[in-house]
Amino acid sequence: MAVALECINLIIPVQRIAAVWPGGFNRFWREHGHLARLWHDGHLLRDGAMNPREVMAQLDWWQQQGLKVADDAAGGEQAPDVCLVDTVSGRVPVACAWLEVDWTHRLARWNGHRRRPRGATGVAARVP
Image 1: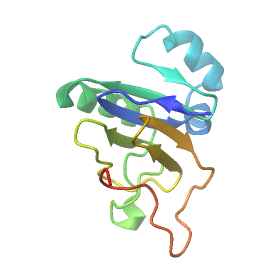
Image 2: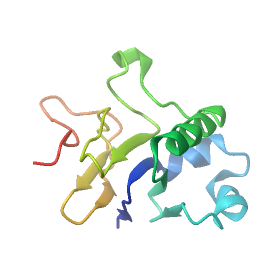
Image 3: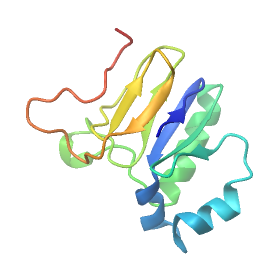
Image 4: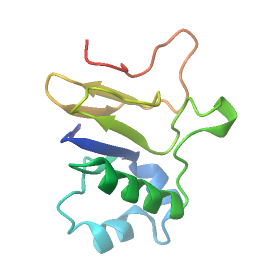
């Protein structure tokens, strides 16, 4: 399964939303699933917008809900809960070891890993 990417995306593992949202992911989806900017595949949720200002407001909101945007223990180099994927520039500014991006088809897939295995490069930072 995969989630479609559009413009600037915030990709979040459903399991992380379930862990921080009172009532879990199903309740979150009942309360917010009507928003046109949200969709999910059961593993990943996509949130996002067409401009950086809106995405930053969404990112702040997710942080207020208890999600970590960057892993302080890794010096801000890993995004354990939220991964920003910019299809406009073809970049993932912070490595997301749990995410695979198909730039050709503009899709994001959960790869099941929380930390990057030794020697792995994680998601591509730029379109090849």
